[in-house]
Length: 237
Image (cartoon, rainbow, N blue to C red; front, side, top):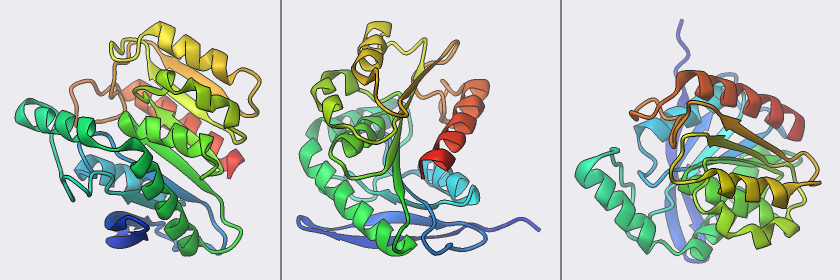
């Protein structure tokens, strides 16, 4: 019998207001003090793919909460990856207040910790814009670990690296024109000596290689990265 993900949208309260977040629970149910993941979207919203990724991690035993980070300007937006959808995604990204969004993540972490109970640890896993947000979540001390996938703009926030006290695992595509090799090198240098820090670059992979709904999907790299992320999270959480 195929397991049906136990998932639903919930409301998260913050100082700035309340917003929706997609909650996905493990098939075996929540374990007291079990691990949790705040899953941070690309610029295309908490769309079908991001919800599927949340369910994927839930099937691996994590309680997953994916906040709608564009709730102020495009609540519950779901976009594709080309044409007018791409243009709207870029408009939403350019309009977002990153600092306010970090505050939203803090509220999401609080809500997730309430779900998993005392003693449970939380990681931030993010893709593209969400990758940057997961990195900032680690730097601001919001989470116990972070896994940024092709985090756009991390190289512009490396002054925050000095504050990171938790393990962070980075994933990049070697063919990613949005994040050139020198940017990856600068991230690697900034994280040198940080406990549990890992940086992986995938040959033949482009930006968005984990997303099976995009033309840039690269199955081998996605599978390898997911396996590495699971091993990393199992140790970190």
